[in-house]
Image (cartoon, rainbow, N blue to C red):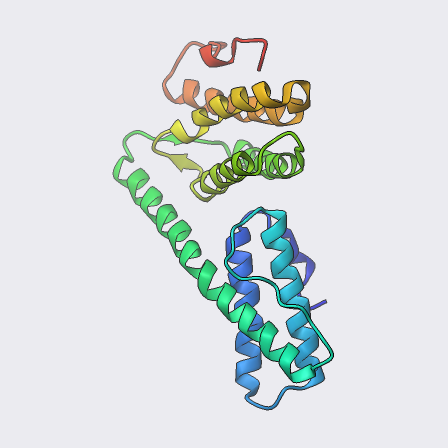
Length: 230
């Protein structure tokens, strides 16, 4: 395989970055060889294009570029796949910059408010990351959600994950997920349980972090989580 297990395991954490990286790796390698098309080029192009297209479909990302069909014309197939990867790279590079810029702004916002910040334990941080990945899987496969609603939820998860750090200036982005859980519960009923359970666990971790930082009495319950519906 052209892409090793380590690369594949990192896709869920940053699908946009993985798309850009995969496209760059193949496009740059082929451009560096600077020669006529050869059979290994087509094999590399097909594998990369298949992976990139699968990431886009699996994470419900929007793309203006359509995976080309491959026919018996060797040179034409190489050129079409190469152009597809080059176009996708340009399309998603802008989005990758937006995510990177948001992360940088968040780090400086936290640094400038260093006198007060919420700090997750390393274990809690890793657990939240894992729960977000599980949420992405469950939301992607939930048949009762409209595609537009699904895209909004996945976009929120992507933004949340890009801004998730050990120290954060506020927790608003997390508490917004509790509202999302209520909407999903209303639409899916009992089928929403895998999604709601994970949002509840994230909320429990966030509340534990918030109450510890703000020195609330031990055992104080989060008001938003008192309802049995969640």
